[in-house]
Image (cartoon, rainbow over all chains, first blue to last red; front, side, top):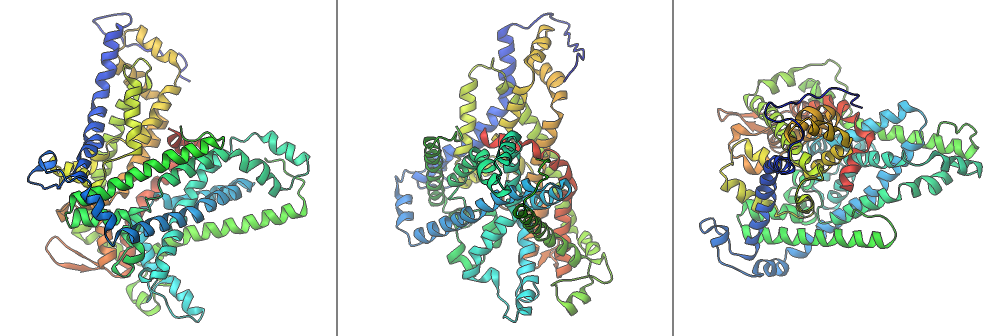
Length: 314
Length: 290
């Protein structure tokens, strides 16, 4: 790269290298806008999260509001919405992980077996597109296609001689729909990450397996899967760490009063109680609980994965 | 991989079933978008007569698009989305570059402290309520900056860019600094010209983020005339109508709903091939591994 392009950067004042101190000052100056950003917009809200332990009011501000200890946490844990909320959040996430995680790996394994570059490219392209489309758009498409009166899916249902179903308003169907639409949206994208890992596997390993007379299926089991083990481990840690993130934008754009009891998750609850009903301290406490659990999960799953001999995320 | 010529019978069956499944994956992946397009160009009469199932629009009409672009509310929302995407991405790239460069230099005093503090923000955040209170406190509500500043730097992309800079040959820095270049000059004249691929990739990802974002606009923008497209789209899909600037309600038929969805999605599909070019390089994996 960069083959001998002349760099002429002579400033009139000085020739030769700048003194180390000046160089450091230059680097630090460049860092200032970024540091301001992280202090204000990342550490600022962390400071603000202190209102979880206070009775926050707009009038007295964050620091001036009276301390409330763990009152909001206690209220939340003993409130009737706590268990349903935790159950919904965990179950939706868990189903997404249990079904979506293997699907992405399977898709990548299949794409990796395809010898036609054209087919591989087309399927890869199409299946990854939805990742880049917003949940608002996808919810719009789903609402249209799942409509009980004029939706495509219900036409299929009717032509099979059954009665149309109001999928998005059905307690039975709401969670499966979340899981399937998540898989539809994200599998192709996740598969690309696995495919990148597969491309790093030494071809000699396949050669050796073939010499041993291994079928394609055996090659997948004995060469490809072990070859992407560390990628699987990393993505799994991240998924487990995110188990309380059941997919806010997705649930938020699809939820409706009919399915509140099976679809309301921690994030939608925090939004509603915090920003719609202005219970700032309570909502912040619930969110803080979620963040802390998430962090504990990511540290412990990383520890477990490392103990089992994989590299983990750090 | 290309020399697997001697196939056993079971291997051939294996291949065929993989091909069948993948073709189905492609059809299932593509059809919903095709459905949107088909419904959007079908005349409302046809939709009423035949429903919106497997539709084939016989005679195509762009009537729905004419009505969609005829709506003042939608034209404004489109402009707002374009504005936040352009300005937002510019801010993202500038700040990410400016921060990633010093962090990529081992000479930076306190480098590990800064890096640790930044990585920590990937694991833990104050949450939406304190962020909302902060944005309100800074008087950013109802301004475009509420949509740009709170996500001005993605720590993931910052780390990707830092890693990219670290991968450039050290001699570049040495040569330039021997000639008396300042760090800023090294960045702008030596490093950036070599960083076009990473700038393009991250720029595209940031742009997609801004184009798709709707939740921040929903909580930070109360003034309806400043709604970006995604927020308006949600209203149209949920309510089936939209309030125009004059206070009149415009009813959205199924074909118009699909036309708005298409208008919101097409920009993504247009830049998608550009994004895809950078896929295989495992750019996201780099992000995840930090």
